[in-house]
Length: 216
Length: 128
Image (cartoon, rainbow over all chains, first blue to last red; front, side, top):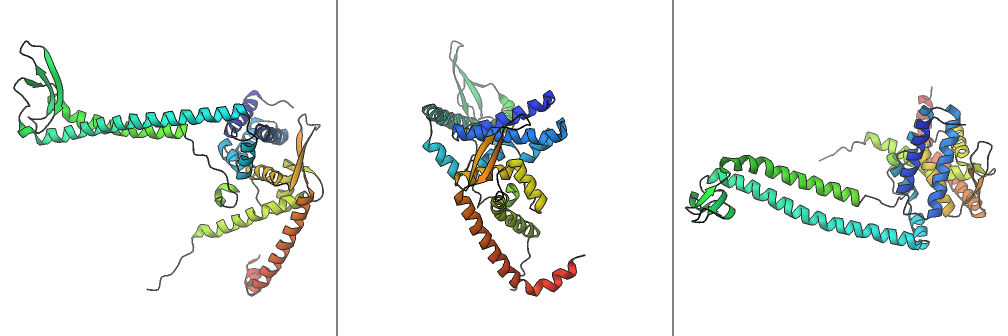
């Protein structure tokens, strides 16, 4: 029997996703599982022989991630650890290296993001309280060249020096109250996304402790 | 203060699901008692002979688990449908386990039925 192209593609995509989710198991177990699920889908599809039947079968099996989680029991993981090949060990070591590096990058980027966002929000608040003493100051030398830039606030509501010129003025308010929170929010979501991508939640499936709704 | 405890409406369903789940392993071992079957045949056997409401995504991982526990063994067999099928059969340990579970189940069901005697009249009345 030949399935329509898009049904065949749906099956291949499903099985490829399942294989990816089973990558921590023994290669022999992984192939066995994927082939058995393929046989099941094909067996069920012979009844309807149309796209709807394939779609229904895939839906009944559940998402590849959930199905794979049911296979990743402690017994299967122990079996995989005992039979791991050199290539698999290297691949796992590589994955951990990427995770650790990504973790470090997330920590550094988050620290910078939260700090910059926090400084901007604080600058906005201080600008409201001491408008004349708060700003992004450009200090000039006597020959007209720029000596330095600095963000400061307070100081008795007066500019830090006579030569200092506030280049932002009231623009500090939208920057502080819109850009600041946006940077904090963006940093939070970037961190969360990266952690979810690199550290996917995978736990060994426990039949005894499984929530009933998610199991049968 | 006298605090009335209200039963969560979901907990009755959860209990039923747990009951079905707990009996699925025995039902699969019993399905294989008569000889080897492949996954879909086991599913159809369970669906046809009971109201277990078995999900496909549960039975296959459970079969794999029973295999790693040494209760069933599997072999790939070529079929007329154009693709091989994985057949499962009970091992000696699986037959022994099925018998043991079957006995436990029968004992449990008998003692629970005995305990349910006071409800019998009410349950029968509810039946159409």
